[in-house]
Amino acid sequence: MTLAQTLQQLEAAGSAQTRKTYARHGVGPKMFGVSYAVLGKLTRQIKRDHALALGLWASGWHDARVLATMIADPQRADAALLDAWVADCDDRAIAGALAAFAASSPAAEAVAAKWCAAGREFVAVAGWDVVARLAMNSTLPDAKFADLLKTIERAIHGAQNHVRYAMNGALIAIGVRNPKLEKLAVAAAKRIGKVEVDHGDTSCQTPDAVAYIAKTKAHRARRGK
Image (cartoon, rainbow, N blue to C red; front, side, top):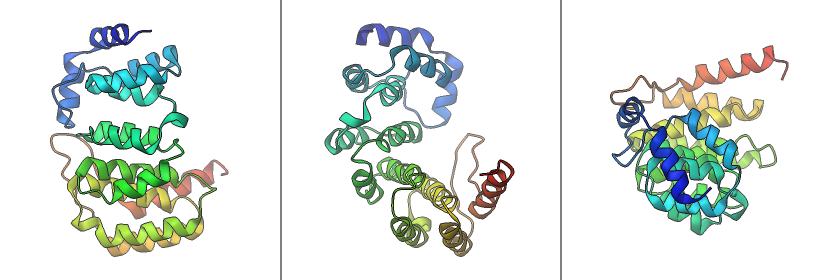
């Protein structure tokens, strides 16, 4: 499928209602309003096409960029490419989509460290979202995540709005990694207290980290994991 054909399909699949929903979540006007269900269907159809992904990202369309993160080859995504893409992130949705892709890249740890320390809100959001995904990688050392818990505890209340949400999510992900980190994360969360995030005109809520970690632990116990 060519770039032009893909953009045509995205445009045809967009809807006013989805555009309205995305706008409430901070997505800018350059969007078609394609649902994630349709994006998933296109991903299964296209499979892996790194060249097409580069073109989709360069198009500047929000939906095209989300699709790009779904079909790009993470093994070909070096730090330079990821840094270039994250510089374009200007809303929570695209930052999260990029983080999901970046976490599978060989450069994941390097960009996470760099992005978490960034002054730009959605770059930092992407960084902490990568951390949350890396927390699921059992081959990485626990000490790395214990240090990140200290950073979260120290900085979360002074962080930018959406960064607070991403840091809270990273804390939860670290807390459900294993019992040792669960203890550290729960203790940190109790010291942090309530995390205030302005979600605007949406139904989104910021989860209570202690309760969410406990809920996840109970769910895993029921499933025998």
